[in-house]
Image (cartoon, rainbow, N blue to C red; front, side, top):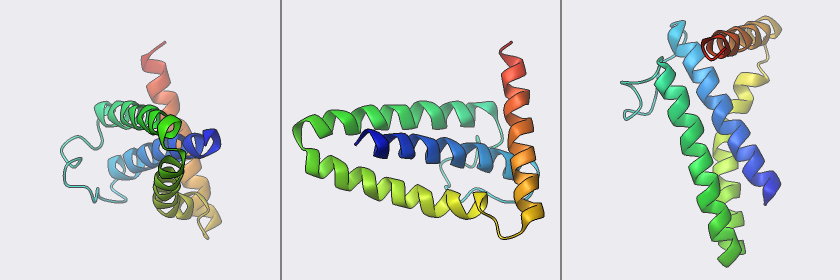
Length: 116
């Protein structure tokens, strides 16, 4: 279960970073109508991180009482985010993949500098 929750957190945060990068560079648009107003802002990334950590805690709490339900639910969420994130990370175009990685690193570096 710990590995599933770790993957869920990793995929969700990766989704947030990639979405932020793609939106701010005009390469994509947000499909979730509730997030459209804040995508591209730092608050979006904060919301993604806090939201997934809260969800992971809730799923862990459910796991203690109903392990089967928690494992199935978490597996579904991991599969959902895996379908979204993995194609972006493992892009068939090597140049596109390199550009995404460079952009994600630059984005993280920029945000980390705000906290230094």
